[in-house]
Image (tube, rainbow, N blue to C red; front, side, top):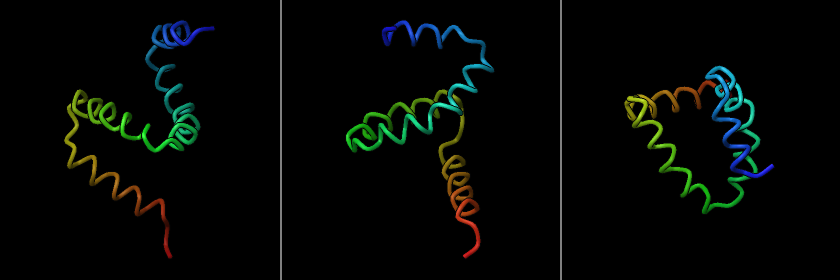
Length: 76
């Protein structure tokens, strides 16, 4: 199956299935892909575009990320 065929099949999924796909597949994909440091520079503008298009406030997102980072670290 080509990349284009795979992409088309994923885009045709119902929203709930797309969301599940993202949540289940993004972490292992990112772990491998981010071993290439230049890829992060390609990914960041995509992520920022998603945030902008969603209407989320970037400052609120950063606060949430900081809070999540602090709680996931756990007590020391």
